[in-house]
Image (cartoon, rainbow, N blue to C red; front, side, top):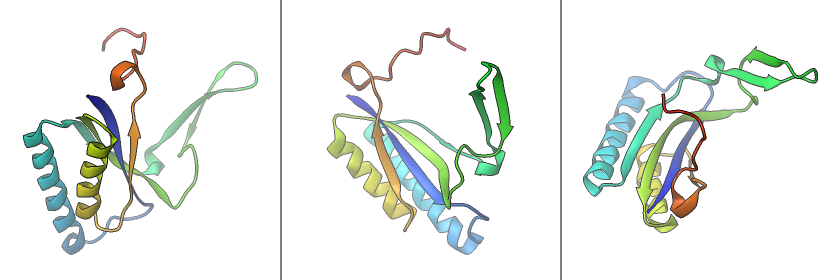
Length: 128
């Protein structure tokens, strides 16, 4: 089994009105229930907009620099994600297709995790 990220990208700006957003959220909840019933769902999360971002990098002098705002400006941003555990890319694409139908016209990006047998690579840091 391998782990995949299903990343949901959405336009920057205010969310759609409830008459549009509520059915989408209901459809996403139904897909999550299907994933859980199939035993492929691992974790999911929604993200605040890019304006809530903080970027941390190392400056030319080796010091840590912390700035407000997204790493990159764009018309779309990562709005949420789902981590799934499936046998292969075809299975991941099936679930991405289910999500794409739920969110209508928004893209779903599918990316495999690195690591042996598709498991996330060890971070080398103690558990939190």
